[in-house]
Length: 103
Image (cartoon, rainbow, N blue to C red; front, side, top):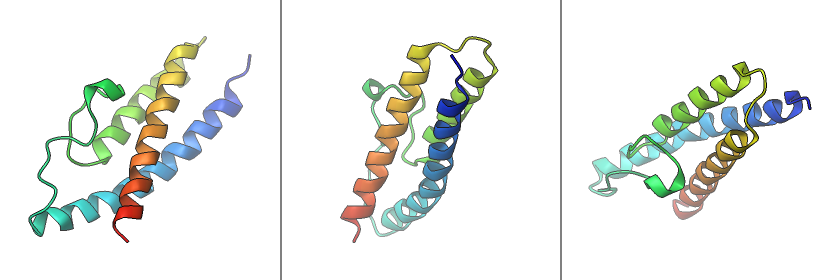
């Protein structure tokens, strides 16, 4: 089974998430300066992330690192790919929610 199409889609979505994460982190910085956003992390351990941060970019960096490792494997683990895709979806949903709530 060729993973090239799957990896191409994941790569495109990671690029999209990265661009949105930069904007969202700037928005979160503004909210913090205004005295809002007093939380420790965006995602919980239950959502599959190792990193804890009150900004999006560290979560995206974690996904990128894991994804790069998957691409180097001769036979990538399907469950690991599914986990990356699931966490990518969680980030996208959260970014969309932040965008919607901030209008």
